[in-house]
Length: 236
Picture 1: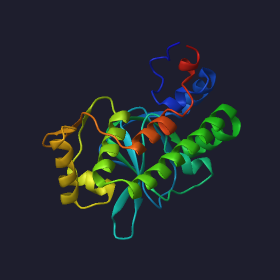
Picture 2: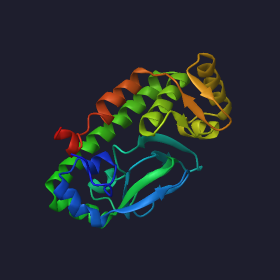
Picture 3: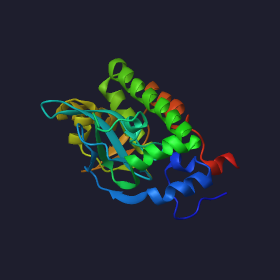
Picture 4: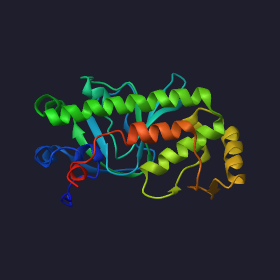
């Protein structure tokens, strides 16, 4: 059973029964997300929830001096609505587009109505909260247990899993910011991976061949693929 061509590619939305997704379609606005775009900032009004169809969004903490550090990533397996699920009206974190792509934009009011009136949507969102929190907890453990080289490999692989190919258009400045280290430190770690034949670097891109740490496998098996199957997959 294939989805209509005008339906979203987001796996959360596609996990809904077709009748429920059809109800939601008028509430979804298809948008294009650009690299570096802030979908929602810390301490801003939580007016919308975004369901990525492609690309990657980083969930980052923002500190008083303006520095940021990544806590989690969201691709087509998720959405930015964790705070809205519990009725929040403002955001405490920043959602930053790392890899450009498409997304479905839904107002918080419509999201709240769907949570209240659609049991299948509500159950799906609660399942996603669990998966999202597990990703954050694994990330915290990884930051304390593994070397920067291993953390960099995990981050690159997570980006690759959520992208459409093995080529990632990213800079070392971005990597340093996301991993909370200085750029020269990232440069050294990237060179180690390159010398080991694990990545191939161009001027502004990293083409990932192979690298992983235990935390990457945990997130991949327990978070990304722990979520409900799409409706079409359940019918196969």
